Length: 587
Image (cartoon, rainbow, N blue to C red; front, side, top):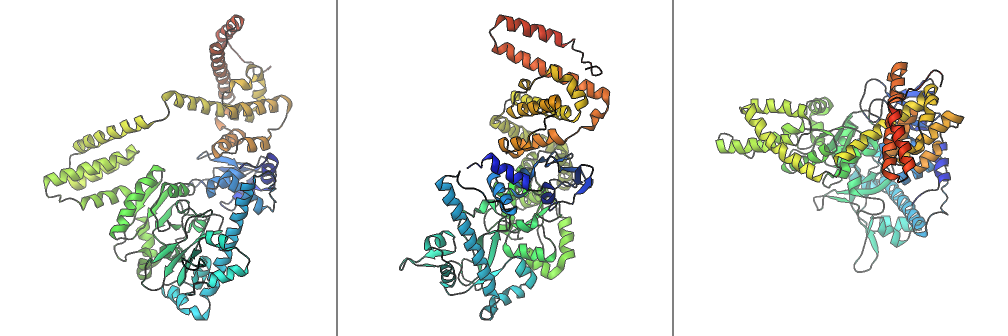
């Protein structure tokens, strides 16, 4: 599905980028722009800039950039279409569905109806929890230490033992059996074929998406029956690998890291204690999808799973998944109290905070876990142990990290550093060989990427230093930029320099909606490299890039043309390039 340009244009123009970004970081007016701490990386000195005029943002620290649409795509892990829908709803813009296929219209309607059903159900469950006849359910939660405020914040509820209570309530609202069954709230009776409540006689935990809409439920029994926990099945709204419980709250935390726990009650107890950066996967294995979600918000995670065997295994599975996304990992194993909920009841906030701050990095967690498998007093066992540790350390992409832990490990286990390094290097060689075999990009692609980066920097300089940019227009043309996006940017900037036409941001928003494309656009239109305030450096940079662009373009044309006269002309131009001297004074 693709929205027409006029729809995207209206949504972008009516969405105030300053207002939206201010919900994630404090912005201060500075000249024609706003500045603040970057919401994409941890920093102490503001390097994040938002241009109200251009409706673009750019971080001079980490390079994140784009428009209001890509900002939400990055921060909320939404697709382009989801972001347009969200902004349209926020700004009360009615999306015209006449351009959608019948299938897309029906899918949108069904999605909206399902969201309404789940919203109504969440209200119903919360209401039931507060009724006198269900006092035991509320008592269960308060006895677990939850305040009424926390219960309300997480929208906790109760489904009564009557297997048709929610069904009858929603039927009165006019929803069809087909839609109710698709919501995941009901099962179909084998005998009567009548739907009945899936979560009967359970404490209810609403599951929210990043825009704080209820998309599923979890239910916990009050007695010892099994299964102890039950989740909604996956459907149009709910995909377990793309949802983390508590993320809709944790994303607004000012913390530079998330705390990853196992279950609903752990998340809720941690939030109530003051650790509002806590999240959990929904009774399922931690996945790469979860890691990608986390990466949108923080670069560090403290794993705080239960201290039993299952919790340790789950942590070991999660570590490489998080590391593959470039996320720094620490692992905290609670010695006293099986889970965070129990520990907080016994020891409180300060004790937990201290343990989290002192949590060991994942390398040591893995080392100590492996140590339990071997009898280190036996030389053969110790060799196997150290070989396995060398394999783990070889996986690290940081040579600094390796250097630190080599020293610590060799000291602790009394092994010669040179021997341990040799073993680790052997494993690294095998890893490097596998990486090379799997590499999709040949070296030439890397060279092209560098060329691409040079052209982005040059276009940004051309745009921000128009007093010199106009002097070189006769030496360059848009065709010299091979990538389509850079061609369009070059064309727009050159027209801006020649006749004063403003860069059409609506055109670039609709034609190039992807985050990486908008990042490039915002870099060109916002990033002004201070190095080029020095006129001598600026002139040299301009001249060198003009020569480089012309040389690349001439060589490309020489390969393409068969016209003798053009070949001769191109060879002459190539020869004259070395003599090129641009007069920046007289133009």
